[in-house]
Length: 340
Image (tube, rainbow, N blue to C red; front, side, top):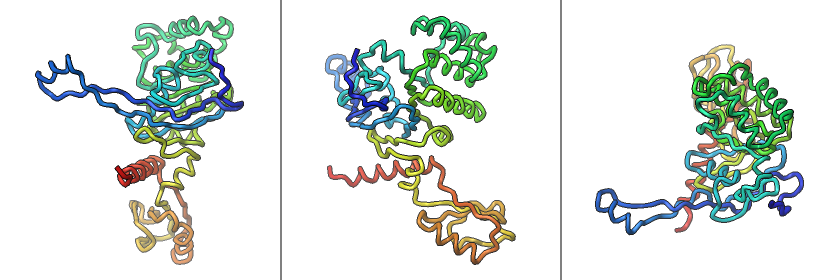
């Protein structure tokens, strides 16, 4: 067992210059190239994660954001021990993940929204029993935890149906229950609400927040649904092209990368507000929305209140997905200006 003490008290995850490079086969199209590659195989190095460093404290829920191919899933797989890194180190609960120590595996879980861990033709409750055997959960503890998860996730009689007969949302809830039966203290969640409807997404988010509070669990969450991040995470990390672009408060991310704000103005009578900013929504003439520069909120608001028949005015940050897109743009521009 690796308990080298590299994780300080209060820290669940410590990552130091963690990297992963894959060797990808390369060949030209055509039969001749296919035959040649059998004897002279050519490869190229593809950097998936490039010397990433961060620390996550016990009980934190951290959003891990980035576009497809940015390195999110690769990082989660290294932290859960499924992949061996090419360089750097990772410590989770004092263990080196890729050693796959039994005591380490009993304390973590990896939930992937696009992967099925339940037995397809069996009822979910039978897969729960298999998990009990794998993790050697005492019967009394297992029954208590199973029944609690069934109640919290509103699974009810669904666990008695074959998994293939469940809807995507029902199956995802059963997957989460199965992954938490051993009551892990670190959760790696890769798109846990992928493909679910809004109601089911909200229910899953509520459950995860409750689990975090009950057990002081550490959660590293990837999601393309910004509602997941906004509802659960105070801290976010943005990864792009394998490198961290940002690590900090969700609100600070908006402040750092957003170059505009929106004003929703309620008027006693319709007025043209194009002199105050870009009108982006005038579908309701008495309640237009205008876009202004991020540093203009105070001055434009003062002018509006003094010059126009304003009944109400709301200043809004741009949607977080717009902010993330802006963050990626900043990173791409920075790379293009770097010397060769």
